[in-house]
Length: 211
Image 1 (cartoon, helix red, strand yellow):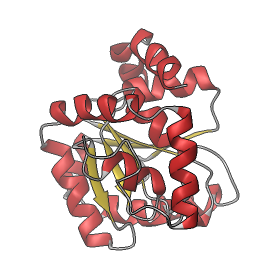
Image 2: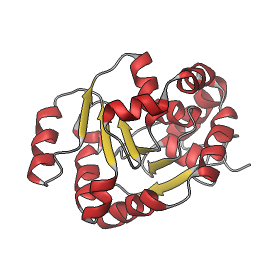
Image 3: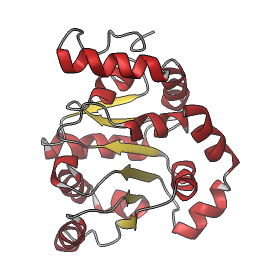
Image 4: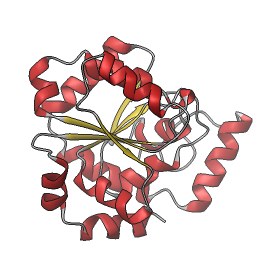
C-alpha cells in the first residue's frame, strides 16, 4: 500500500531519527534479504571506493537479515567501512522510520522480477539508485526522472553514481519518485510483472513508466 507507507514516513520524526542514527550528511538506505543475489556485496565494494571525505560525511544503512549477514559485516570491516549500519530485520513501523530518515534508496539486486521495497521507498519520496536487473528499476526508475539505473556488478561506475548522489540535487527526483509510484497501482504492478516474466513488453512501457 503506497499511501500507507507515505503516511508513516511523513508522520515520522525525521530529525530525531537521524540524530539517533548519528546521520549528519546523506543517508543511503538499502533494504532486503541478506543473500548473494541481492548484490549487497557489490554495494559495499562500491561504497568503499568513495573518497574518504564522502564516506566520512555520509552514511550507508542496510536493513534486513539473512544467511549473508555475518559475511557482509566481515567484508565491510575488511574494506575499512565498519561505519556501515546493519540494522537487522525491522517491523514495518521501524522500517518506515528508516525510509523517513533516508535521502537515497539503493537497490543493487542481481536478479529480481520486481522488488517491492522500491515501491515502498519511492512512496516515501526517496530517489532510487536501481539495478538494471530488477523489474521495479526498469519500470519505476528508468525514464521517470525518479533516479538512476546502475549495473551493480560494475563497481567503479556504481561508486561513481554513489559519489554524485552524495552531493547532487535530489529534490526533483524526490517529486518524480512519488509521482511515478502513484501511477503504479497494485493491478498495474501485477500486470507489469506478468509481462516482464513473459517477455511481452519492453521495460518502461507497461503503463507507468515515462509519463
